[in-house]
Length: 274
Ligand SMILES: Nc1ncnc2c1ncn2[C@@H]1O[C@H](COP(=O)(O)OP(=O)(O)OP(=O)(O)O)[C@@H](O)[C@H]1O
Ligand SMILES: [Mg+2]
Image (cartoon, rainbow, N blue to C red):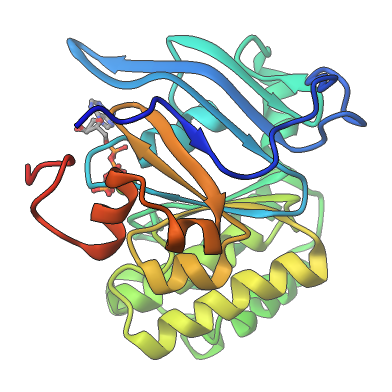
């Protein structure tokens, strides 16, 4: 069945939207971003708007390019084409010193936690502060412990990553993502592999950071209960493009065939099996 290129059932952006003006669009705008690895095209002129203060959830099948999209957003991977606007600044053409400054506004929870094996959890969490501030060690430790308490990991502060379970590593990664008090948080699969109770605690933390600190977030997940709980809007990535965006209610009610198949977890349908 032919599916529409992009269905956006939320209110369309205003016609006078000016991405170079933070007053007009203070959030994140991805426009026409493409990324290939050799012959494999992963992102294909992908467009996505994230409003300031919202939590936008990205869903999509494994291997569709969700992690690649997040990494392009902070140029951990270089886009082949397109523009990425953050607070009125275009970052694809940005020089390294400016980019470093901008990256400080972002917290990134990596899919595999990406902790340094030889450093304790506390040192891992405090690393960004050590590199980017002139704070004394004691203050850095204090802030790292504060973040570890937030994710319920204070007892593990002296442990090495190899001594932690997968879920604990994920929570340590989250503590590290928030240590610099970012304005934007990119969460790559924050609840995957966690038990339902820990998952829900992470969901609550995502909501708390948004409500209390006003952060703007992108959450990549396959976990639909989590998507429905934390998302203000949900976008679906398929074949390199965002094919659908809508509120939680709109996603739950849509008859868009790709979205329906995904949220119902059916093997039969237009997405195929592999
Ligand atoms: N650094 C890289 N070099 C080459 N190919 C890559 C690289 N990173 C990702 N890819 C490829 O890009 C595609 C998308 O990968 P990505 O990790 O973004 O998928 P995903 O949607 O996050 O999947 P999952 O849900 O399993 O995490 C895959 O085919 C992957 O092999
Ligand atoms: Mg991924």
